[in-house]
Image (cartoon, rainbow, N blue to C red; front, top):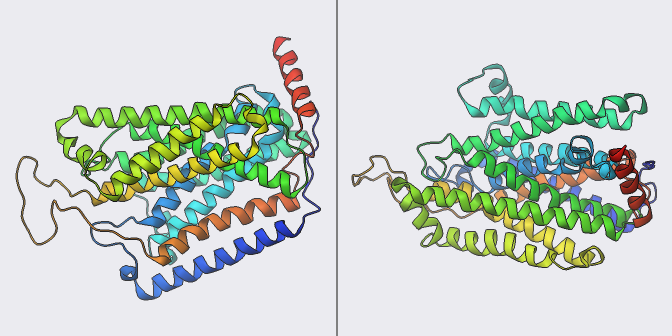
Length: 408
């Protein structure tokens, strides 16, 4: 199976305009960071009850999607689907870009980014946050090494081994991200070991949705053919991943309803949570799961590029809604300090918190997205992360060669 990787040497006005837009968005996001750091977090919608706001929604979404963006590379090197091998380099660089964008938002949202070195030199190994530092840095290292073995011909023999370690580490990374919430036993919304496999499941659909958008935009900008067969395979994978994520969401809420101590929270999120209930049913379930599934079940889905792109966009919208419900909704629900007793005080104990995101929070989150776009565009412009051809003839030849190799 031979394929040629080439940089996007000839790019039109659309590519340049997109790069300029991302650069401006990143600059505005950094300006919002300066504004929040200069005036304090009082200018945001966050308060003593909701300390993780909209920037955390963007950050966690990007970090989770980073793991799923490595899907194509893992399928080629770990699961033997070598017909996806031409997509592996792009998959790897997108994973690194998404993690970098997510961590940028996370670091700048927490406040005092100048003291980041303190968290690295003074580790608390009982904290999942400290352990995640190793998971994040390890992900960068393993994926970078994985890309190197793919791009350097002399190192190709080590690609399966590098892909295996990268796959294991991405599972650990997503497990650690889910465990950030699962270990917070004081919050009824988070106190569940199911959050780790749930985050792994949803990372698959989030990452593939972002990958589909990047692949389509890159092929369009570089005037490179993209075959219907490949698009159809990506659509069928997305159906499986959406269904898997929906299954774990269902199991998570059914498990919560089994335990009496979680009944109040489930009633809040599913029925009387206001904006959180609306985002759960309309954003997460309908727009993020049901509608994309129905759109992708068309028998000739490979030829319907607009439908595939729209379904990927809906998955991302549903993912942001899910992160908002999980992160902000989980904090807004009042803490139960003394189960079985009523608590009255002047500190909002047991009271649903109010939160409304501010413009600087939106700008910071979008700044992280802009960084992802700039990293990917730079990689495509300078290095050969995208094959010259992905039309049906090339992909069918790769599939046939892979089948013959497996049979032998």
